[in-house]
Image 1 (tube, rainbow, N blue to C red):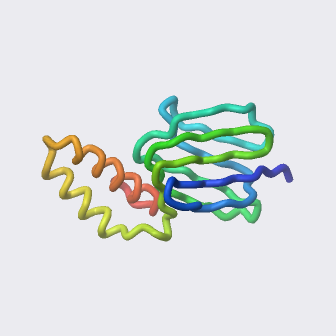
Image 2: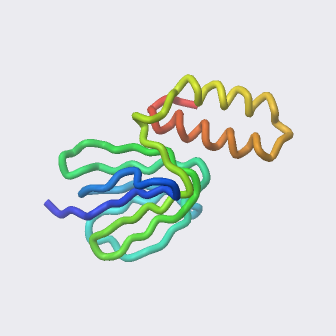
Length: 129
């Protein structure tokens, strides 16, 4: 089975690393699926996107990612995010509360960022928005 090395790193901490058979990420150009042997590329991650990694053990690692870049070189994928949270680190109720508060404050530019982050957190834990 072909595999690749994957690193998910946020500005403040390493989030996850290991070997995988696929990576899916939301970029400004659309959703990208990366398999071992993919052509080298650099993509800009969307604010409030999701990254899903399927490990060599067939487990899925899901993270809410807030801006940054995706780099594919050889058999390595690096996700360099401004901030990122693994699904198991997310409190769904806190994300729903943040989304409700952002929706109530629709005129604020900050509300857009809070809304994007809350939506990504909910998607990462598998809750429809």
